[in-house]
Image (tube, rainbow, N blue to C red; front, top):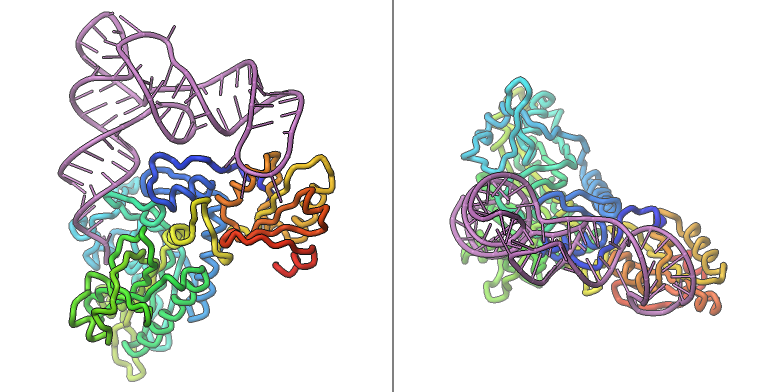
Length: 413
RNA sequence: CGGAGUGUAGUAUAGUGGUAGUAUAAAUGCUUUGGGAGCAUUAGGUCCGAGUUCGAUUCUCGGCACUCCGACCA
């Protein structure tokens, strides 16, 4: 993409109403726009990052049998009354609104009821199970106080998968697969090394749920990590009994701050019972469907990646989620060869891979922009480099500069 | 929801009971071109409402918004 086509532009200064590093840098780079506290629009560059993350998650969910669909955002009061979660005294962060005819609807803050209600209509037999539907959707939570930029918003985009299994045994097999798929996702988006599977409170049907906690000072959760096994315990269940049951040693655990980038949870029959979601087994007997939930907040993940890798010059994207792999910087010159070379490289690498800074700006400003925007590689085309017959390529993360030939450039794609 | 604070141009900030200033971004022209260039010209602003006052951006009250600390985060 040509940078001149982007209506967004970079800012020199951070907005005064953001203190979170992720929001400051993403606003400065023109990735996001703040609509109100806890509510952000995703600008063209920001959406590209979200889409890259979304595709990685989609691939991993599909690989364990997930089937993508879309549940509605407007939710029927009746189905939430079945689980007693319509009541504001039970769930205090609903966004609710009214239909013209006076009826009430809610904006979904989670998906268990919607899925249980839908599956109720289709699941009758053991032959219909298991089922692993999931969706990417906007979620609304009327938080009294939002903070941390896009890490905790009132409106956010998440992936939620629900597993509907015949019994606990079948559930457990899938649960373990999901755990591995989650680890792959965090590995692929570049935060695997800082992300710990964390034991957290489990609710009615299992001792623990599992969170995926990424270590960063921007985190709001306190966890105790075991560096060797890459396992952690959330503060909420941190006690001697738990430590022992996990085979960990208290003195080896270190207290850290983390962001919960994902979680997986055994729900059991907590939601299937109120919906009477059961099936006939092979003997013709009724059995309750056994459920699990698996969530990842995409905006939160994006914000966490920014927090984790940004340096004093700006954002540093891991290659897998960068909006473009390359920033192409053409240093203005009177010699037409410079522009010609830049255009040639742009075409060669493809507009999907390159953000081409074709604006009429000075070199310093283009370098600063490229550093702020954080593409993994910067290719610099100038009179000097053309004269040497080589191309200059700089690694955003390490700052390393290499002089390479045009042929070598091709290999980078 | 409890506590504290802040609202001035697109952005970041200064200042004042009496014509609102600077930087940056923007527009035009000329010069310039390897780490956020220079000169000139132009355009652009006091969150909303009420009160006090001859006069309010400034003081008072109310509202709204935003930020921070705490609580909450199913």
